[in-house]
Length: 196
Image 1: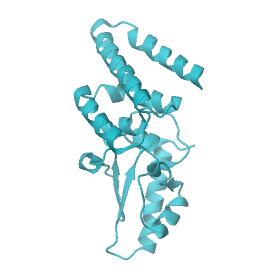
Image 2 (image 1 turned 30 degrees about the horizontal axis):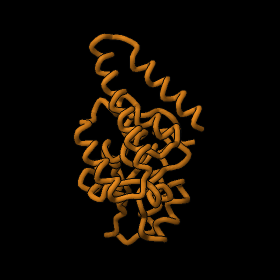
Image 3 (image 1 turned 60 degrees about the horizontal axis):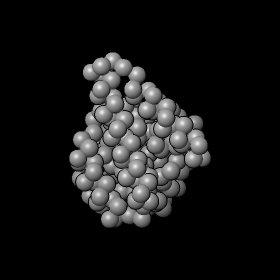
């Protein structure tokens, strides 16, 4: 299980190893996805099993990174917009060989929406994430992702409506200091437990 600190430590160690293995002018672009990205950004606190990245095209680099529990398995199957790289967010760590990025908040939601995995829905319904989202923009990106990827469209739109409702309830909670968000979030978690 990897915490935020463990992820950072493993990336720093991998960077040192890459410094030994690569030519002086070689760099590796590493794009964190999934729970790893959400942990690094401080959006979630739960541990993750590994450090998921988007595709790594070099087998030598892929094998080195696997030694540090960094892999691109999720990047091979996740839903993503074709222009996601326009929205990458740079992560500033003292790295020499790795240029480290995460998917944007929008692309993290797109990558997990409709997956039917309870932990993915729990991640994307997190109030810390949703408070930063413009739902008109998310809707446009979801339309693009559906065109570009094989995805359960009905489930994706259902998840979209639910997280939008959670965000609206969160705004109401912040205005009214009520318990609407906790209630709705608990209902969604119950739905996911029943579906599993």
